[in-house]
Amino acid sequence: MTSKIQSESMNLADTYAFTGTVTGAGGITSADMWHTSTNQTIPSSSTTVVASWQQEVYLGSAMSVSSGIWTFPLTGIYSIKYVAYVQHNSDISYITSYIQTTTNNSSYNNNAFSDLTHKDGYSIHNVSTFFDVTDTSTHKVKFSHYAPSSFSLRGTSSEAQTYVQFIRLGDT
Image (cartoon, rainbow, N blue to C red; front, side, top):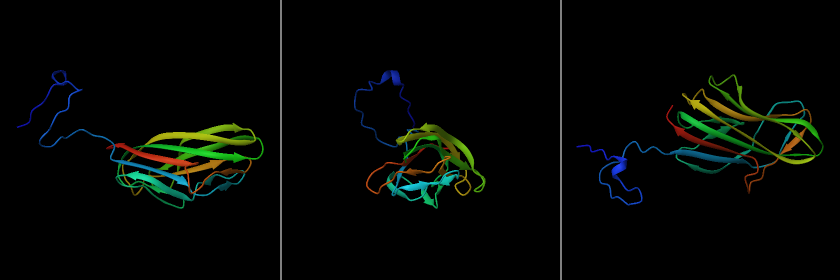
């Protein structure tokens, strides 16, 4: 026998003891955070993929990365957030940070990007997107940068300076 309880008949401040199985409650079942483990020089006038990732923490099934190409553990809709901490020793007319995705395991498109002008010193890029992963063998993501002058992407093994977060929001 299945019973439905109307929300207006419940005091949500009370505690209820349930027996049986609660279904349809949803919630995040897969989340992952990685950061770069070393500094990486991004050369001038060349789109360069971010490498040297180190896993920080995960819930559920973990992402995997090889040569800067990320593989999703499960199909579903993902929230992807990329934060790049960059250092440059001179003014740069712009630095572009990309989230690039493919649905055929070959041709990458710019899914989201941040394009900022920089003065001498440090700056932070924030780029985020949603990605509908319908096939884990063909749907991939990578993070890359382009600038007319070289700069350093900051990373260290002890803290998240440049990092990425993946959160599986639900089924596709």
